[in-house]
Length: 96
Image 1 (cartoon, rainbow, N blue to C red):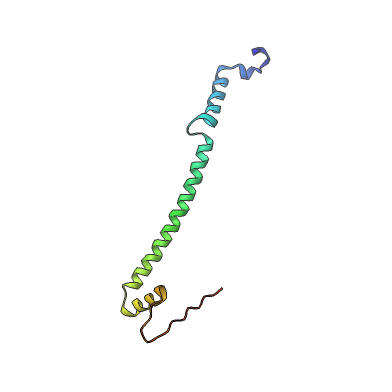
Image 2: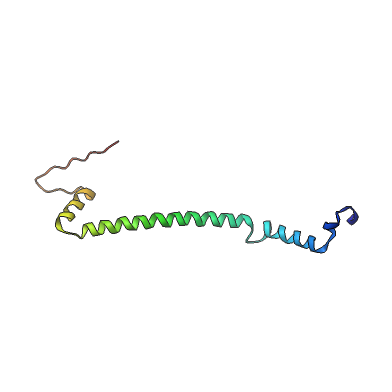
């Protein structure tokens, strides 16, 4: 049986290397499939991190606008929370 194999596959080091390669490719806890899943999850989390950084910047801008002078506080309340004075009407126009 051993005589039918090519000479390269009868070498101990080649056999050991192939077994190691198969082990690392499919059977190990750090196999290629797990590495691919982890890298995909890492990319998704990095995108999510960038999204939340952008939202933090928006909230900080709103905070600066809110704690500015009285006019900007009034403007912020009207735009974000649709507040109004007692003697006025508010019309909300929604664009489709």
